[in-house]
Length: 225
Image (tube, rainbow, N blue to C red; front, side, top):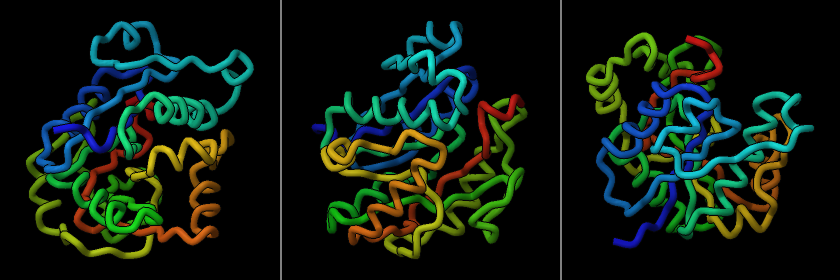
């Protein structure tokens, strides 16, 4: 079937997190036709050479002294411009989905295009979480990820078709033309927060899809595990 949504992820230094990201996208059950797009964001040489990358984005020299967050917004925006599907989904390299996480995000957006659909995150607790009631440590790619335990937990809390107020910003679905047309993420720290505020002010409904359960190791590659 023709892909409807492109799942876009960034990577820059860790092959372990690259494997984690791809497994979380492709080894979970989803009915929605999709393709993945992995962009190397200023990647280190050993990552740039990895065949699993689909594209490379290099920031301009003046951006390289800025924070990693600043640089990634440029790369996210680049990924959106080269995707070939009506919808895009941004997901962090430190995130791993449970079955139908993508289906549950796409359903409300296809019903109402003025929806910002985000996942319910189970976060490992290394920094404060906006989902404190769901904090649980299942490890990470560099010190051992307990996939079976995460899947059992996700199955126990998942609520398909249930939506609550939006709390965190990824994974998230956007209409690609709308996202690109408005210039993507503002390219400054906190650009995703600023975009969400703007869209909510324009009448978009920001929701958490409680049927889309995703584990978040928090900080990922940047944690130097």
